[in-house]
Each structure stands twice: as structure tokens, then as C-alpha cells.
Image 1 (cartoon, chains in turn blue, yellow):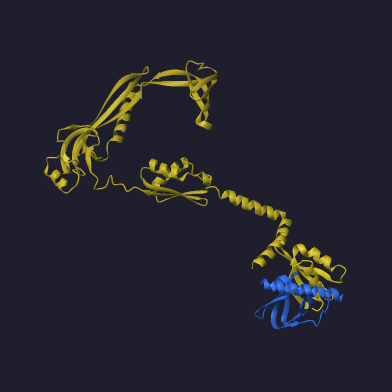
Image 2 (image 1 turned 90 degrees about the vertical axis):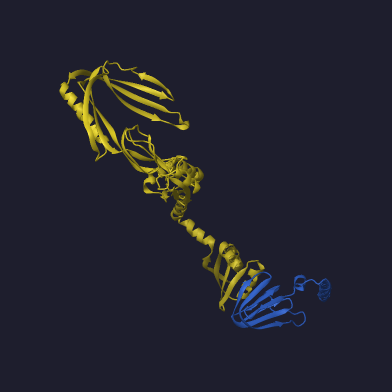
Amino acid sequence: MPLESRGRSRIKSFVRSLSESLEMPQDVVLDVPRVTLIGNVQVQIGNHKGVLEYTPTRIRIRTRDGILVVEGKRLKIGSIFRDEVVVEGRIERLDLDAPRGNKEEGAP
Amino acid sequence: MIRRAWTYMSGYVVIKVKGANLERFLNRLARADVPAWDTQRVAPHMLVARVGAGNFRRVRAICRGQGWKVAIVEKVGLPFVCAAALRRKALLAGAVLFMAALFVASNFVWFVRIEGGAEELEERIMAVVTQGGLRPGTPVDQIDRERLQRSLLLEVNELAWAAVNVKGTLAVVEVAERTVTETGESAAGNLVAAQGGVVEQVRAFRGHAVVKPGDIVRAGDVLISGFIPPESDEHRRLLEENRPPYVRADGVVRARIWYEGKGRAHLVSLRETPTGNRATGYLLRLGNRTWQVGNSGPPFESYVEARSAWEAEPYGGYPVGLERVVYIEVDREREPIDEDEALESAKAAALIDLEARVPEGAEFVDGPHVDVQIIIEEGRPIAQARAWVEVLGELGRFEPIEY
């Protein structure tokens, strides 16, 4: 397992340096999350890995690079697709909880 | 906006999902490529969301065995409206029928209105446009507006301009009348004799008198000419003013005028009594040719005919006709009438005829005289009377000059 995981991260860093040198958008090439905040009323999260928590005051969304926490009032999921989720409401706080090491939280 | 319209067009359902861990439910939807929107966490164990109408089956499949209960709260969109309409077949049929009837009806002219012409012209204008194919019931696309306009101008002389406009199911024939200048004060013309007579007195107010007292004139002869003769001063003056040497002739021409009336009366009357015998013959007509069918010609020596005809002109204008002739045999009896009586009635008829011809208020100079003679016409003696009178009256009638 450690061997395989090391191999994978090597491939990742290769692809990243390749995409950087070719000036390609990394969210497209690397499957990294893309977060767009529109004022304080909407946040679009591309390349998500699923909703972990959904309440009117807090929505947590898993991404490859950690858990995105949206806090606010009257929050709701405006739409959800395979690779994009849109959170609407009054957004007060946006937080990215980066994972410690390779450990990821709450498989769906 | 576009997305909303699209979701309405394709139809969607508002669903309510109950159960634990509804976040996972949303993730499963996303992974199964079932888009969901307008989700709301109304309670910790309840979620409301909208999904495409076509995806509801897959939503139910996702819920199966997971402890989530899904139910449709509302169905929104065009497919559901259409389905509801389709269930009400009679209403739908009525709506379609109504639209169809409206569409068909709007392709015909329902009313024809004439605008702008004098009332006494309307009947003639209507006759012309009807002849030209414009009447209630004519399909709108069969109206040849230019041809109608042309024939209006050709057949109704009083019109200076005509236009046919179709507004929906209303056809408006707009016309403008020619301003008639022929009888206007400025129009040049002669004073001519309205009928024959002997001129008694001539006074020309305008124009050049061409008759003198004692002249015998016939109807149509010029009495006072509107043409000024070239050698006169007036002719020169008119030319200097750059005007044609014509004026509107005016004046008084009094004359002795004869009026004549005629009357006649039979001296023998014919009495026809039907004998009761009758025969029927038929005439078949095709184009210009006729054939006798059945009885050829009248079978009686003296008879009267009663005809009834049917004729049609089908396609191509080739007329076909059938005529029925009933010959009714009669006995003719000649019955002499008292001669004096016949002469008197002829004279009376002539006087009545004369009276109708003489203008009211005419001054009688001579007469009325009546004479009567007996002539033979078609083997029958007839009394023929002539009544005449000589009056003193105005002879002139204005007639415009064309130059």
C-alpha cells in the first residue's frame, strides 16, 4: 500500500508540473476543487466528492483537498450535479479543512 | 431564466424524502447523474427537492432498500398540463374544432362595405364588385383587387378613383367620385332644340344666336352657339385672354312646338274560348341548335301557347336548355264592336297620350286637334287616332361642347 500510494503521488506531481508548464487550468486537469463565491449569496463548488452535512446553518462538502465548510443562514443546496454543487443562502463563513496526511473523513 | 423555461417545458416533480442521512441520498443522486435543484432541508429527517419528471423512476430505485421514503408533492410543467388536457378529450376536440373553424372562417369575406360614394351609386358599385367576384363568402385569396379596381373605374363613369382593401373578413371598397364639371357654370356648350318647332323669339344672353324668328328647327339643332365666330370682337378678346373661343351659351328661345299623341282601338274583337284540347311539345336546346321532342309543332289550327323553360349554362358557357310548350286549342270568335264607340275610344287614347307629352304649364296656341282613320292591320280593322297641339314654349336645352 505505501508503495502504491507513493507511486500515485509521484504521478500527481508530474501531472501538476506538466499542467503548470503548459498553463492548463488545474481544476480541469487535476480534479482539484474549484470554489466560486458570488457575493455572500451563492457559492459554487466544482469537482466535489459529496455532501457530508446539510442543515440550514451549515453545509459541509467533501473535496479532494479537504472538507469545505459553508456556514450561514437559510442555507440550501440550490442544485447538485455529479461534479458541481451550488449552495445558496446567506453565506457568513467559508472554510477549507485540509486533511492531515492522507486521512480523509466520512466516506459516503 | 432559460433553465427555468427548459425545466418547465420538460416537466419536473417536487419530491419529499424522509429518512436518515439524507446527505447520502443527495450524493447518490449526483453520482447517478440525476440533477436535483431547489433542495430544502425542511427538517432533520426530511428533504424537499425538485428532479426532472423523467428521472423520478431512478430516484425511487435509489431509495429502495435504503430506508428513504420518497413521495411526489407536486407535478409541474408542460407535459403534465398536456396530459391533463388530453384526459379531457371533448374539451380538447372542441378547442381544436373552434380553432379550425375560426381559421377557415377567417379566410372568407363576410362583409362588403362601400365607402366614399354617393348613395345612389352604391347599388351599381355593389353590382360591379359582385360581378367581379367579390361578395360575402368569397375566399380572401381569390379577390383580384386590381381587376376589381379597373372594372369599377370602367363601368361606373362617375368614379375617379377606387380601391379594394380586405381587412380580415371585411372587404372595404373605397371610391372617390369625379367632380362633375360638365354642368358647371364654366363648361362651354350650345343651346340646342329639345324638340322640333317654329322659332318665335330669340334672345341670346351669352353666345351667338344662329336661328331667327320664323326658322323651322328640328330636335338637336343648335339655337344659340357657344362657339364665338372668329370675326367677332369677343373672339379676339377671348384669345387675348388666352382662353378658348367657347362660352356657355345662355338665352331664351321661344317657339311654337308641336306635340303629338297617338291612340288606337279595335273595330273587331276576338274572343278566344279554350276547347279543352291541349298538347305538349318539348324543345331541347344545345348551344345554338334546337330539336323538337314529342309533338312536332302545334297540332291545332287556332291555339295559344304556354311556355316554360329551363336553361343552364354550365362550365365553359355552353348553354343547354329544355323548353316545354303547351298548345291550348281555342275557338276564335270575331265580334264586331260599334264603330262610333271604337273611334271615340281611339281618340280618347290619343288625347291621354298627348297630355302625357306636353310639359305642364305650356301655353296652348292651337289645338288640341284630333283626327281618326280606320286602317287594316293583320286582317283586322283598327281605328287609329292622332291628337296634336301647338304650344308656345321654351325650346332650348343645354348641351356641352367637346373640344
